[in-house]
Amino acid sequence: MPSGNLPGPYEIEFLITGWTSPARDHLFRANVVVTGSPAIGTAATAIDVQKTSGATAKLNVVANQIWEFLRLFNNTAITCSGYTLWRYVTGTHAKDFISSGAVTNPACSGTGGAAAGQLTQTYRSANGGIMKVVILESNQLGNNRVTLVPNAAGNPSQKLAAYILSADNVFISRDDAYPVNALRDSRGENEAIWRQVFR
Image (cartoon, rainbow, N blue to C red; front, side):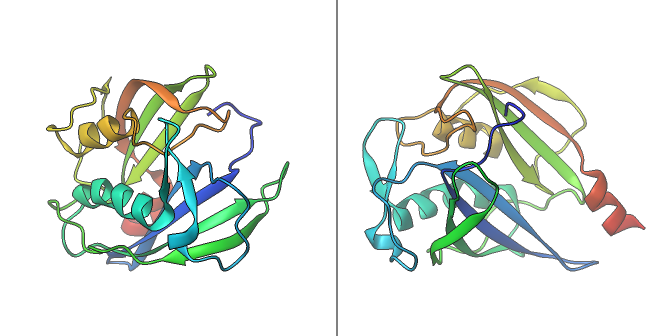
């Protein structure tokens, strides 16, 4: 994402737990657009999130849809403890709690992952910026960079990319535009997690 741009205007954050030796959790965050201005504490079933198509869906529906793609990246020992919707204070990195909820199928449904691994997907946004999607300690292994090929019947990374480039997508880049083109699938190690696990 272009440096200097701020996150938001809203962000869905998933808390993903279950890694051991040592015990650790990860957050997955996605910038989204919410219609209207929901008050703090508004139920997820009453909040509308805008899709690439211009249509909207309720926050609880959107969160469950995103999680159905994310849960493919890890085995059943890893679970989602829930999601939170945050609203960023304009022009800052400060954020206010708006809503939260639980996903319908909290357990992951894929194979085991790689300790300290990091997968980074990149996309071109409609405003010309770069959107990054980061997945930590997933089952998508390797130390290489390849072209990201969206494929609804492919591996977990390709399936997520197919969603992100579909009309159902809700992710936006930090330049406030929806992604329009998949670029790279880059895999390697996250140094901070590597030090936590192996030192």
